Image (cartoon, rainbow, N blue to C red):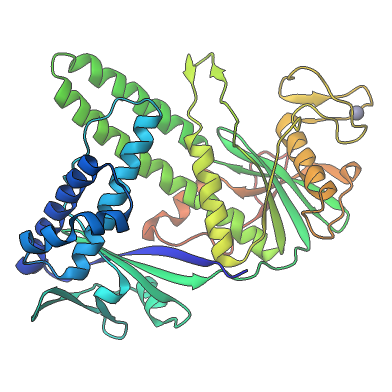
Length: 420
Ligand SMILES: [Zn+2]
């Protein structure tokens, strides 16, 4: 089973985008929008159908564009149309799509990248090429110098380019331990099981919920203040949304990096609950439904990074994981408080208990390799911290590094927060 993984790497440009390239971006946008219109009229969405439908006319209208770019514009138009159709079928009110952003895409045969000096040779039309000089850091060099990466498509934006790097998915290692995590609003809580020992682990990200709340309030205020001007209100809210997105995304990447570094170090398989079909409950204190997006996003980030690094991840149907006793198997009918308690005498933090059930499900289904797990061996007095906000504060200066070295600090529950 050969699977190709793709990762888009952002490069800044040395100097301004040459004016020929700027015109190319505008032409490309025009071609995309024309193709969208043609596709809407003829009710087609696939790239090939669009090519068949409109290529000849387009070739005459867009004389200035290199033909490979034109085919790519059809592809972008195709995905715009698919998105539009999907939103209509969901019953959302949507406007006829129109691309405003300046952007162009080129397939890997339509440009050349010199991986030694980082210069992109981008054809504009016959006998006219421009060179784009990329700013190279060590991070970027790592991708350019590694021959196991092949080049995919190129996306050109007014101030940066995105190069897709492709590689074969590495075969995940055979796990020697398990890291089972229950995903909550403010933390990942779970157990680490290895060689008969079971310890509690925690990765906390309380700021994510705080950021969400703050931006929610801000949006509400903006809507009230700009109630007379819906266009401004919408624009401001959109900008707020993008900021919120970036801030949360940054934290989630940090959390994912430390979880993955720990798993890789211990040769663990990671178990996560499958959030498909899961509906968030109404939160009484906030008086609204909590967004599930950060939790889904965290899973997405963990999964793709794990795949990239060859760390096995198992998605488990959560079933009755929060209501089952891992010792005697009794199913309790209602949700409890913060503590799970059972008639058999078992009691444990509700979230950690849920993660134990995830691990048991994974093992009973045979998806966890030959791992063994004994919930009775749980050590109640040990808590391992995979991530806490203080770690981000320490690593913030250069922004790009993940937290090597201080991956797991063992904290005993009694001496709260004292790291050993
Ligand atoms: Zn029990």
